[in-house]
Length: 170
Image 1 (cartoon, rainbow, N blue to C red):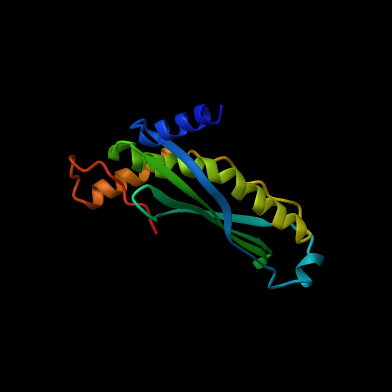
Image 2 (image 1 turned 90 degrees about the horizontal axis):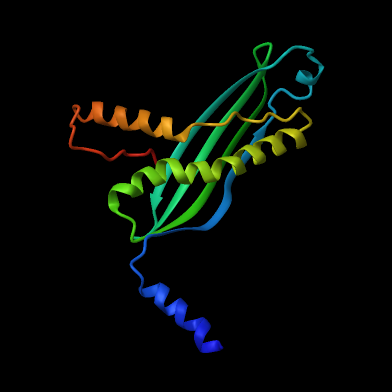
């Protein structure tokens, strides 16, 4: 019985089938600032919220990539910063036998789509623990975001139609 269970594992290691694995998902960075506390707690006004989202990709090895989704969320009331949250949710993803032309879209669409719910949860939890009503970030269309970055990269390269890759920010 032991021989049977180890044989498929050996066969999988030699297999040329494409595989995509999540190696690890982790909170890489998180900070909360409340520069005008406690005075801003006394202001009774609706806060304005500004959200920025960015992606980063770092090659670790031939098969491993670290992908990060970072967000800066700033809440202001009457021109003063109520709070500022910066978070970077990251993951290590393994790509085996995946065609090169499919890796960029997976790094720019699939991986951020996997990471984003963790980022949303961590930000909402941090804001709640700071004594505020949690802010739940809206869903993001990472496919549309990827397409927009692809078009910008093509325009920056002089509209080179042969170029199909996108360079994600580091």
